[in-house]
Image (tube, rainbow, N blue to C red; front, side, top):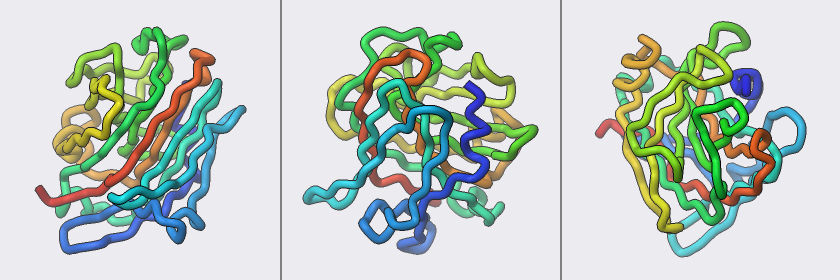
Length: 206
C-alpha cells in the first residue's frame, strides 16, 4: 500500500504540555481539529475517556485511514529523540503474513519520517501479533517505507513502548528529523476487522 499518499494533507492536534515533552491531545478540544485522510473505506477513530484520561479508539474493517500532524520544527528530535506510545489491541487479525503485499495491514502503528508527495522516507512503528519485536523490513509496497515492530503484546491490555526514533531514523533513512506524525490502523488488504486503542503518545528527551 502506498501509504505516503495518505499523509500528505492529514492533521492531528498536538500540544506541548511540559518542558522537554510534546504530547498528542485526545481530549474533546483536541478532537475538534482532528482530520483524517485515506483511500476507500475509512477507519473509524473516536475518543473516549477513563480514569487515566483520554484515549483514541480505532476500528478498521476493510479500511485504511490515517490521522496525522505536520511537524514544522526540524530540531524536535534533537531536543526530544524518544517517542512514547501506549497501545491496546482488543481485536487483532486472525492470520496474516505482514511481509507480503496482501498481508500488509497493521492493527496499530505510529508513523514518522520525511513525509512528502514524492521521495518520502517513512518509518512505521507497529504492533504485530505475528512478528517479533525488533523485526525490521522494507515495505512490500514501497522502497521508501520501513516497518519496525515495537509491540508483540497479545495480552489485550494497555502496554507502553519507548523508542529512540532519532536513532532509528538515522539507521533506516539517514535522516535525523520528522516533519509529521501519523496514527494509522488499516485492514484494507486483508479485509478483516480490527479494534485498537492509542494513548499517551508523546516525544520526550529521555
